[in-house]
Length: 567
Image (cartoon, rainbow, N blue to C red; front, side, top):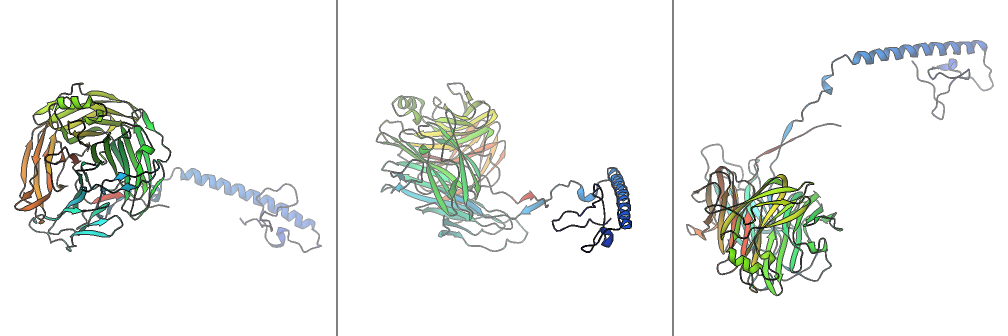
């Protein structure tokens, strides 16, 4: 069947004899193309009517045939090309292991609330350093380095050692180490992949000061950047300064949105969305400008584009008395169980006497619970000490309101190191406050223990240099065996030791300053048996300084992702 002839306007030139059927066909002179001034002949008109009837009959036939095809098609098997197939899994090349280390703690200068702040210089005694450890595999030490956020080099840890050794006997573990390198800004630890496997690496930053308003010790793991993270433990009441520091170590801009939760529910804060962090830069946000007067504040930090490292620099000033400094790092994502170890609790009577004084309410140990969902959470809290579980005076069961933050005091148990386990049938986020110093009007310190992950195999744990350092392990429901090997500054992984942890207990292992004459910079830790958790507890002899750092996840193996092709 021929296409209808189109006129200049793009519409069909239908017949002038009666209503058009829309199915007419025309070719040549029979289609009614006449020279100007010519007249139609009766015979031609008859032919046109005959052609129209023939076209209509043909169209009916075509439509009938098409209907038959459709009907028949519904009974025919589906072509192989239209079947649903699972997307094949494709191996993703291993990338560089990255950890972003916070810069030194600094005092805020006068600035408009909520904007990027300016900082005063730190005190005369303030010092900030980074300690790092990188583990080699298959006889190869990954190329690794400490860099500034803008990409310029701060220190080389190991050069690229080339291809891995051929298959054969098990290779002795190698390590690259950086012991207490002084830094004055945000830095980035990076370690290259080897044999398409991510490198096992870790770094920790430590800040100390013995004078000024920021007296105390703050330590933090250098964080793997992420597009979604949770931080608990901030406060914006009088005398408490909380500054969220966002660092973008990627090559892509990051747009950050914040969700804030307080004691009375979620906080809708103008200026909390669309925060741009350019590549290789840091952006600081004063949280009091977004949520003033909050005793307990929980945050969710989400970014689109480049991933960011998020940390809260928090300091306390009680009148003219320094109350501590800390870097609060992200913990585990919302889950029905959260575990925090490395929790140091002081004498119960001393805490009671101190917190009875005005301005010292937050000098007591406490668990902070954030429930982001729409349902209340009934949370059961258990404390595991050196010789077993200790009962909380209030009973250990609390209802945490949906969409808000709830604080639970952990005071009243004997002094010692603890593992705090909280469980519920509703997902929540948690962190535990640790404090030291029992004398009013004397400098004290504060730290937040983030919720950690269950220990597996070959965690690399960086240990800050100087002061007292302890590895703290907690086992919950059953017995766990911990194997730990010291990493020393000369690049050796020392002979492993083993600790058997009974279920429902917490064990502490003092970290020596040296092993075989070399400084200890970290550990390789593995766990077997029932679930176990670990942290590094940092202090300073003769001072009320404290900091705690949960163990980081081990290096991930080769990953695969489903890939679907289409158009």
